[in-house]
Image (tube, rainbow, N blue to C red; front, top):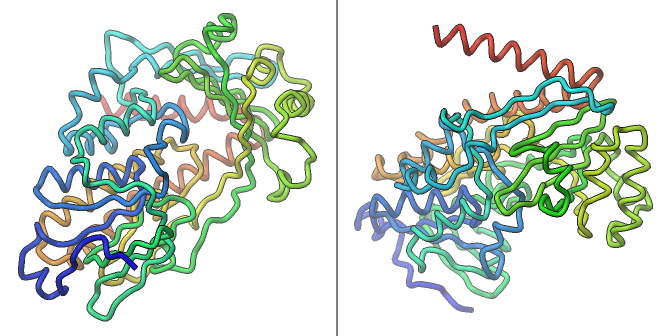
Length: 402
């Protein structure tokens, strides 16, 4: 069995100071990469262990809106804000809201002369920025974690599928919904939210009529517990999610052959049979790849008893539905908060003690918001009720400005 690097005793490591503490980050998504990069900027080494054989962020999700009070703050701390700002799509804040008949409730066009607070960037592009700034030996691909075993001195032994092992002072679970690190801290696991999505992609250039309808940002079409959610990505494709409430086993029992695209699209079109033709085009004109997904969430307000040498960030800590737009932003904020706590504290466990209560507070509020938005968007009169919510938020924002 191979040991990846020589590992001094925990006591020796602590005496060498915080810059020589051994930190492992499990998961090479935006959160894990941001954490490693901010630590690197402060002269603290960490190793990211990623299960995929190479960077796969470009294939995981589409466009992300990066918020100025979370994701953008993390990018500033990482020294990447100017690079991000130069390529971010502020026009991606265009937004249309309809019901299934195509009735328009909102039609917002971003002002290109005035930058908004939530510009868009593709996930792969964002992670490319982070990776380009990260020292190459700080990330190791093809390392699927099997288990992290607590040792008597507060360290953890990491055991990987490829046979490698490592012993570290701090293991950070940045490994998403079905985290292998989370069970060290809590028995809580992901619960099905009641929502199923089918991901599709439309080539905007090949379908100019649909591209013009979609504009440069997002379209939300909501009605009767169903939704068609569409967003233009930086590569010219429109990422589409045909979404609906369904039993957890629906994907297993519905009989739709998702590996046979033409048949699967016909079945989806039947499900959205009474929807407006332009909205149905998001399904009819999609390319031949359909990805069915169940949407999971962790219990809102999840906390755990603090333990030595281990903590969580991102979806591993507070998985929620995507309807607050906070997933990647919270992961990056978690990364920033944890990195700065490590910088400020000589002792790893003191850093965890400083980080976790702060993370619980802001992530719990976002999880509440996300769950409330899910119920609204897949409830009765969804489009007019979402319009009313936006109107209230705009009014509150205007009052705060004054």
